[in-house]
Length: 115
View 1 (tube, helix red, strand yellow):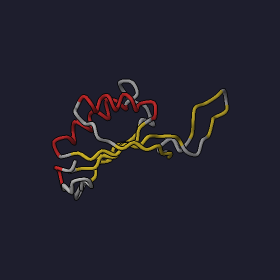
View 2: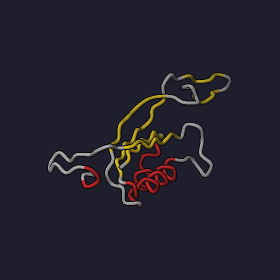
View 3: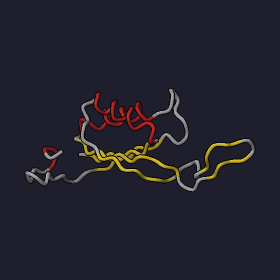
């Protein structure tokens, strides 16, 4: 089992959700978040003035998947979250972490059956 954490642009959320549904990934948690990466919080240029923002708004997805869904999930996020064919700085990141256990509170099921 893996926990996939993806940080994406807010305007890509619908296309990422659609791409995930195409690979039969329907369970996810979505959180608003803020941060910056390589851009260091710098925004677009307006004339000769650069708009500086300390933190950029992003969306964080948390998706617990069984092993056979890891690559399809990653590919769906990349497909839905990339700007254009080549992507742009700020499109986001995907982190894949081991998931030791998962417990369904309602039934007490554990492990891959609980996902």
